[in-house]
Every structure is written in structure tokens, then in C-alpha cells.
Length: 559
Image (cartoon, rainbow, N blue to C red):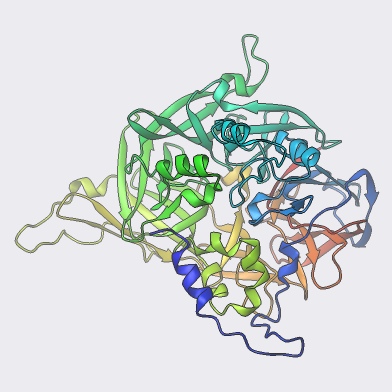
């Protein structure tokens, strides 16, 4: 079944009802227009913000955020939120003041789209527009050129590779960014070091020593393989970390022609964590898309009857263990960590299915106020899975009673379960971490990534609530949360930064970019919250010369 089937049924089942302006707003507190804005004028020279409250004077650095920045070229529009050209936002924080600037990444896709005034490359949800000047033979030649299928539009995230900053998406490309001017200085192609790679994660992991790990997918004659790729500090004449790229672990895809879509992965002290969801990329579908000019999304498949496979790879021995749970869709892992040598904890923002991806098609965003299914499709649950690392080896399956000796998870304050099955598999059952729908989760990353932790921070993902623009703090021990909100305001992923000499996990601040709905399309801001209480400390607000689009992910570079 194509992953879009259930969403289409929801759309067809809608009934439109009249209101004052001829349509009913099913979600009156949500302004979906914030997702549909295009930046029409870059800001090259930083502009000063209007400061409210007091921004801590010890908070000095640069916050760079990334996300889709436009909806069209010429008369041709992108069809999915993930397709817009990468727009970088820069907030420079210094001595209690903040400046803002923004700039499109000059990727090959952006430059060629701009020159042609049309969409030249296939994107996630948008197919390329053929050149009207090409004859039939030229068009066929273009369609069969694989490079046409590989956009370099790196519009998702920002990560440091030692002292270099790169913009990243799920293609084979990354762009080196000047952290002061936002200019694109260089394009990297991971295939130059590791051939046959067709995809890598939008969310690498940065170790304490600066080593970077990412996941990648390669296609070969025998099928598809998921890899963990390591980037070390350059040595022996190597110019950048990309020159050091090497595969440190590999897992053949359980469905060779339908490898799992993997937006992120996890790392703990001793394990790599791959969550292979039954939301997959059909290799035959990709080939078909290339031949008949369809977007990448046309090759995605959802197999709801298949289980999700959680694969652990021992970082020392390369031993692999698979664990199973009911099917779910995910984009982001919150964190993962080991409890002695007995358990591995994995916290994930879980969706029932991938309908959220369909929600982000621009047509569906435009019609969201008339779709009673939209809110349900966009909701998720932050959930915890606990994997038994050693105890399950002591268990046995009783063939007479057709059962194992019970739950393999023996931890206080945990509702997680793991049961040994007759065929030797371990089936996991999660517990909810809080009652709110959360997305773009963040933690005190530098100190607690891959380590036991207590708090994570996120934005709300429920358009049906009275306050859809939430910043959420979740206590994973008490299983409760705190929230911040402002009417008609839409925050971005909250990024944590510790107070000088902080001793507690939440002793610091959260930084979040702000947008406003309705007619405030050219207003953007940065808010600083106390991470303990979520009380506002200060903010900077800016008036931009054109609409301010919503960003996705970012990175803070302290002075």
C-alpha cells in the first residue's frame, strides 16, 4: 500500500461547512500560513532587534538555523514543505543585543532554478519541470541522467565538522557555510569518498572530541545496506573531515529492495542504534520515478503489517542484535543511553503511521482547516523503549506453556516491557513519556547525548489545541511537562545552552526562533527562556522586508 492512501481517504471524507468567509475553521487557533511563506528578499547586512526583557550577558554566540525558504520559481510552485530552497537564518547574540540576517544557500539546484525560472531538479514532493525549449530527444536524455534526480538542496539542518559549519539534508551533498556571512563556500559529495551512497542522515551525531558520525544508505548488486559513517579530525594532509570519511558499521536492509527511511539514528557509549521502520524507499519506485519524472515521495511505501526493527550494533565487536516492536513512523530520536550493561533506553517521537509526511504537502496545508483528520494525522507520542542487553540471554521459552518467564525489564518507575518469543525474538512494548505531542526534540546535547538524562525540550505538534505554538519541557523521570506559549506565536526547535559553571542538567537557557501568524508575516524574533522554569528572560524582535518562513533545525556556536 502506498503511504498516502489513508490520507487521501481522510480528505475525501471531509465535509465543508460554511462560516463567515465561506469555510469553517476546524482549528481556529492555528494559522497554517506560517508554513507557506516565501522569503522574497534576503538580509545580507545584519539588522538590529528590538530587545524586550534582559538577554543574559553571558550568552554570546551565533545561532544558525536552516529550513525551506521559498515556495516557487517563476510560475512553478513546490508541492511539499520539505522542497523549498534552503534559507539560512543567523542570530548573532552579543552583550545582551541580537542581530538578524538571512540568505539562501547557493546550491546548484537554487542557481539553476533561479536562472531557468522553473524547478529544474526533482525534490522530495515535487517533480522537475521540463525545459520547454528542449526537443523530445533532449528531454529523454535529461530524464535518464541520474544527476537530475539528486538535488543538492540542503535545507534541513546545520552541524559542525570541527571548526567548519555545514548545511545538510538527506541527499549525498552538504554545503560548507561561512558562519558570519552565510555564504556557501564549498559543496561536498559523500560519494567522492564512499561510492554507491544514495542517502545520508539529516542528523549526524557529534562526539565530545569532535568526531562526527552519520548513517548512510548504499545500493549495490545484492540489494541495499545501511551504514554508519565516521568523520575524524583531518590528519596527514587531509583538508577536511569529509576526506576522512570511512564506514565503521554496516547492516544489510531486512527488506533489500525496500530499505527503511532513516531520518536519524542513535549512539550510546557502546552501541549504534538503527530503527528500521516499515516506512521504506522502494528501489524500483525510485527507478520508475527517474524514468517517468516523479518526485522522490512517489517511491515511499508504508507496510503497516510489518514490525519496526530496532538494531543494535556493538561499537567494539560489531555484533548485531535485532529487537522488534509494533509498526510506527518516526523522524527524531530524542536520546539513547545505557543502564549499566543490562539495558539500553531509547526515547523516540513516535507516530502511528507516516501520514504526517502527507500533511506537509502544500495543498494539504492549504486545506487543513477543512480536514477533520488533519490534527490526528499530525500528532505523535514521545515514547520510551527499553532493550534488555544481557538478562534475556538467561531466559528460556517454555514450549509447554507457550510463554517465556515474563517481562525482561526489571526497573523501578518503568512501564516498558520486553518479552522473549518462541522464535527467539524479543518483542518490545514502550511507555509514554508525556501526554503532549512533541517534535524537533532537543537535550543538553554536549553533556548528555548518549548518556542517562532527565529532560528534553520540544515544540508542540497538535494543531487542535488552544495553544498550538508550544515550547515543551519534558521530565522523563516524573513523566510530566511544563509549557510556554504566546497567542498567535509559533516557536522553532528550542536549543539548550548551559549557564556558566552549571551543575544541574537544566541550569541554562533555551533559544527559540519565533514567527507570528495572521498579518504579522514580516515579523521574526528570538526568545530566551530559563530552562528550569520556562519563564521568559528576554527576546529580540525584527521587522523583515519580506515574509519570514518557518525554519526546521539549527546549531548554536558559542564565542
